[in-house]
Length: 512
Image: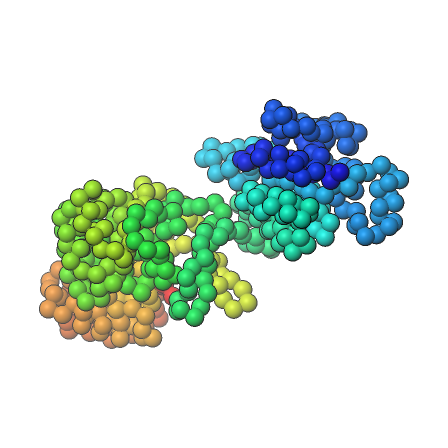
């Protein structure tokens, strides 16, 4: 008779699976709570103590760490000396292991989790059995995923055993399973110890979706989600309407969310190719939309729109008039949703904006042969801390407008320049090899909208005085920039020449 060892934390669909094993000639060895569930279901089981000849000890911390278990798992059936050893020691081979692990992830996701609780949910015996069975996959079937129950039973029913190909795939999955489990433990304990630069970095993500393609149609792509999902993330949004998001959609939507979380007042961000083409704010969402749209009526076509208030009918009616790829907001009024959903291909997504300020400390990007990790640029700034370096002092209203522009320029690609008034961005220049070209683009976009309210934000310092001179010649009255160039005085002198109020923040916001 074949033998299966079953010990699971998550018992979903367990009983029908084990009944199927019994029907296919297995005797069942089980432990603790799993054995009770199976016994209650009328399935005859063998207690693990009857196999190990040793009781569970240390509050269940030790029960399967025993040669009668691991000998039965690791013995190679094709080696006579292995089988003679089993016979000599009266160890029964184990042909299938069904194990899933203590709920460590679920435990540490609790907001009030204590270290002691987390430690007690670190499984030791489970991963050991999984690894032993997976190592010996030529002889042992290892099942760690409920999604494999039916396939495994089907092969036993059809062939009396599982195929070597199936066992090999299940073994690979089993090692991924234990690797991800250990990665979460190492992340948690590393964080508990306050270590920011461990000598080994172990991260784990779960496959959320196989995508149609990547940035271009000839590139394959996959979407993975952090094993500890973040609430304020495009991956946590609920899609209410439209076809699946593409690779580029997700990148644009992610950038739109990074930008919209800067604002507490009603605001609208229009994102295009990971650059803001328009940001508007107002007393109402409709007013904010009008201003974001007016910022760049051309580039917004096919854009990704993020709004930080529930979408009302008036705003929806205006958005409905143009082609938009994605609208993401805290929600949609019924009549607003109805009008927007008339367009088949638009994607409508809702997300809990109350979580926008939850900690999202690190971000990673790939480079050939490695990866970079850094803290996210989520620093909170106060314009009262800025330093005025010119003869002309900014007014309180100018400072508020400069803060709006400063928040916007954080989310444009370097070298970034934003022109804005107190209502919206007027022109955005980004991604140019030099700063003066970005400024020229921003001024061109702003056009005749530049007036006495217009301010300029630069994501990094001015290397020369030419940008300030160009701004002065085009009517800019106030500038915010980090400062720190060896030529700062040149820019300050130019600002004084044109009567510009200039403040420095001491903080740079490059976004490559």
